[in-house]
Image (cartoon, rainbow, N blue to C red; front, side, top):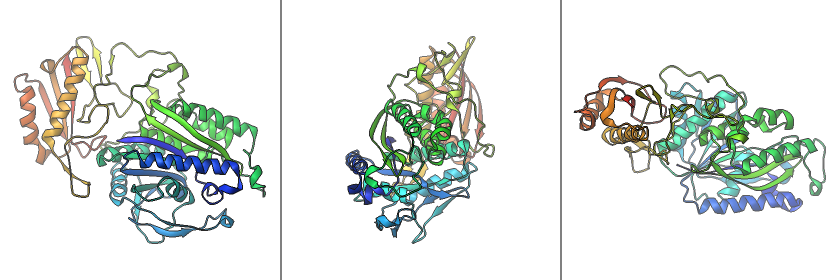
Length: 452
């Protein structure tokens, strides 16, 4: 469950030199205020993605439970040392890396004493989580990953959060405009490098303040080109995918200030499923290539807005969506009506509203070690029932079912017992398929055709 997301800057100045510039001091104060908010949120995990932790071959995940070292920033060494000792959740990092590997991505974990942590991650954790009260997990930024791969990394992160089942704060460490002053400047008179960069930063921040994360992701290329955004603003593609690629957030801009010519902001995004979307404000960058993964892996990356209504366009009347069922993980509706028939998308057991997965079995440390197929099957059929009833149909009108099980040998008999309770008298036709994995870490999914 994701509680909130924050976008924060990673320069050392607010941490080490807030007294040298009024704007740096304001960033420091906002950072600390957000830290207090996080401490009181009930969060159990901080997931951090920093554009300053570069990787070249795939993606790296910090799994050293207590990374300890002294950092000296390579550009701002005159500001002094930053000794650190953080608390990391290694099991989440291993889970995130495993999900990436299962879906065809290059991923590796890091648990090496003295492995250097980047300035952005260190600054963020020092100011947001100063007492290490909440364990963190840190993922690298591949400098060559484009939009599709970065979104795939984000989708994998969302799947890991759902599987882990802990209340999570997502932290994205990135600048806005990223044009540094190349000559020495008087810190007291720091300013954004150009008026054009400042104007673009403010446009982006206005969108964030309205909770329009997916719209920002859609215009990221334009922003990167016009304002030299940090790493092409790819961090927003990752964040958008982790958060579900939509605009349903309450947004708040805590602060916006220059740091050595760059644009630095602290932004908060709180999920709000009840938020009404103003389609007139929607942006759509257009179709993108699907990030290639091996067939049957289960992880899909999508341009969610490619099939969503845009700028006043209304969805066809035969499309069925409902907030009473779990939100689809891709660009598809819950069902479509064709003549006298209803065709349902694949429906899993996730809990409506929260997206949590019922029936997960955990060990004493909270790691997932198994699942209860009976619990997941009941939840799955209940979700199917909800969608059918929203469409004016019912379980009694089901004509055909395709079942996907990730552990056919172990789960088939127990699945059948629950299935028979609901469909024993209805007797729809059925096909049962064994698969390696499903789009989220669930163990059963149903594909249903019913009479309308």
